[in-house]
Length: 339
Image 1 (spheres, rainbow, N blue to C red):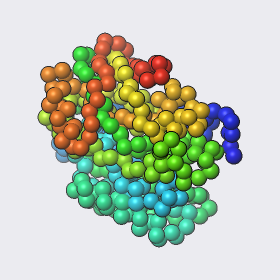
Image 2: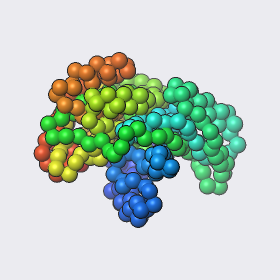
Image 3: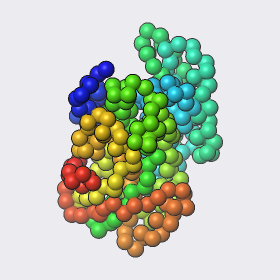
């Protein structure tokens, strides 16, 4: 088995986050040339273009290599659900109300059963949100695709104007995740497959297959209500790269300081099995916090009640201080990870 006896990292598993961010920097530089055509400056979770005085947002995201695990476990319906969830969660951070979806599903063969499962999952999530699937693309490419790629694009309208930013003095509220969501699966798969050989295992009381096939929660309604009510000053969906994307809600003169809570058992098991360092875990996985909201002290109680009304758990995990636009995470293991 790969890497037996060694330690795993995201780069060793095949994903170089620095190269990934360099790709993002390149395209963002090119996108900057489009500002005079009506596209808002980049830097948050979605983009919108003004058409006839209305701000229309578009966003695209996919499930990634989680589909490999879901296919093995016979749970591809979760891939369809996740594909919708990751998109609407992102755009909600810009106060965008989703109205319609498009899908892109790439398969290595004419696997109608897998296709139906994925579509059913998309429709489950769309029904939960009250949005419509209005079209998509199904690509069967046996010489190009080895697995199943599931991608969605969300279309919505932006409520209010501008972007939402945290303020110095705000508290940082973490909202619980349900597990890995749809991020870090290349590393998680390598760890599990190199040490256990399959997903049919229970380690330290953790059912590996069950944990790695959990769906991504839909936070969008909570976020829209939190921003719309004024209880939250900003929101960040915690996805790939852990708390890195929380930088997007910081003004240049502020830092976010987080004291991370104890992570759920699945993350401890992956860290132990893969001999992954705590800083690496906090650069890859959400570590139990799937959403960050910032709020004033006066609005803390109201925001906490709202989070609980939506079925989630709030945690006060930090504060916004004067700084330079950085995020500092103090892990339960004594490390400080800076983004």
